[in-house]
Image (cartoon, rainbow, N blue to C red; front, side):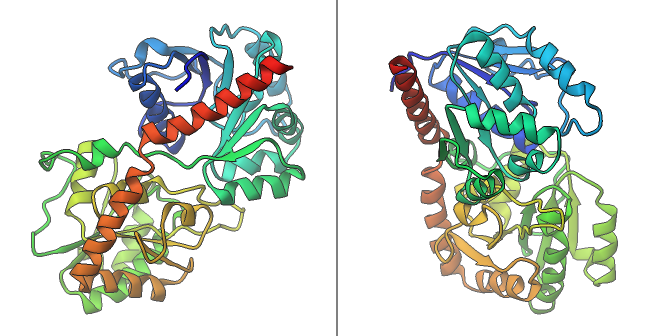
Length: 389
């Protein structure tokens, strides 16, 4: 693969605790493993794990992250002023998130006379377009971008619909660290954050932030139905957020002693849960504010461990789950259909194995080296176009 370019990347985080951070972390690890020269610019207000293999490539010089300028108009001036202080070494600029660093990438590219682009994920691919002055700044960046990558067909289409025109858009799905989840011969040792679950219990695992659009309430309602027919079933939900409303709901549904909520797990703890579960389920929905699931990396993580998954026909989830092949898709906000799909998998071991094997092959197609190669091809097209101009 052609590595004549040196990448300058902008993002808000590089930790595994957030979606943007995890994407950035895995993206940079893939570049590092391929020996691709790059620099990662992050907000100067955050701290970064110095044990990261690509630590020497990190520059803490971006303005602090915020989701909207809103009525604080002076933020736009501050953002522009701070962008003038960023010094880069690369010859192509890529913002790994949408706003505000897609705008900062545009300004920086103009100053250095370089091509730039950005990756759009989910809700915040379109949210800045719904308000002023974010809309004016973000729209201008999209209009001048040499490339825009979307993690799903749904995100790409939603962006075009709201934007009103089509930027140079390519769909490149999220990658998964397949070797991390699939290739270890032994189960990782159980950490302090993982409870002891009896081997006779059938674990249904959910991994997702505790927010309305993740469909946790629908899953609890579905599990209440499952619990009546599967006495050994146990639901484990892993996610950041306020867990008390969900624990109260579980108690109200009479399933409090069969639901466990966890957060702040290590990757090794999470992998162990993926491997111990029978079925993985996450049931996203589009909420009243139009917030949606951009893709659904957790389905691929579960598939990497050979587990069948249950998702919804919502947002970019159909790009992550092959309905009837790697798992089942059900309508959002439908606990009856969700319970039916999960019970079908719990009751049929061969179906679980077949879907789990198909899921492993599907996840391997999304292994980061393969995904990063698609980004390389996008970069190469941009560099070739730039030479002709």
